[in-house]
Length: 232
Image (cartoon, rainbow, N blue to C red; front, side, top):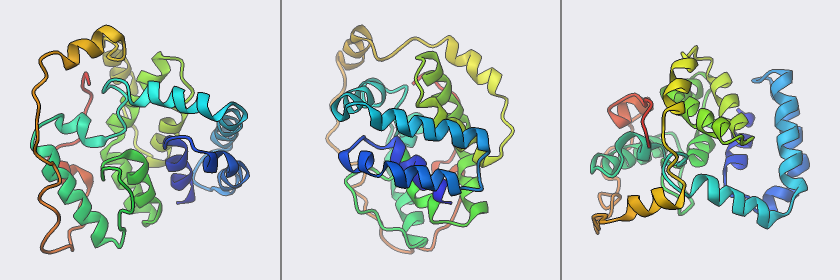
């Protein structure tokens, strides 16, 4: 689904290349048959607004949103496994799935980085891609609600993914849970997070993929649990 590739680009770190691709991104949105006309209009507005501003301002806003605190982390397994060793094994299994479907990672990003995950799904069959979106739907709603609370238009991108999944999720319950969370992107919260933080030197990807690459399972089975709401 081309629309997943578009969302992947828009959720990634803003670059000059992204800004220059404005017309291509808009054309891809317009040609998509997987989202409503209302969503198309809002997505095109998002793209136009993003590239209309200064690139460095867009990059700074992105950093403050997604790289400051864990609540809006774009790493799937950080929400599922935190810093546990299970996270490393889950990433190894996810890489195996990628390779079994002919998708090679040519980036320094971790395999559970949402834009990379969407890039993979954009090259898969529609039903397969939707199932994998359903497997992370609770997380997508949580991220959207956290962005809505911060009055940030990036929430739209997660809402589009939820629509594409076709999953009927009880969003109000998640919204109420999010409303009770404390912000983790304040200076005080960040200082507390790093205070007396244990230093780990092991590489979560040290056990690089070996053996059979024929695994093809939903993310729920890769992670060992369905993604749910948490106070990241």
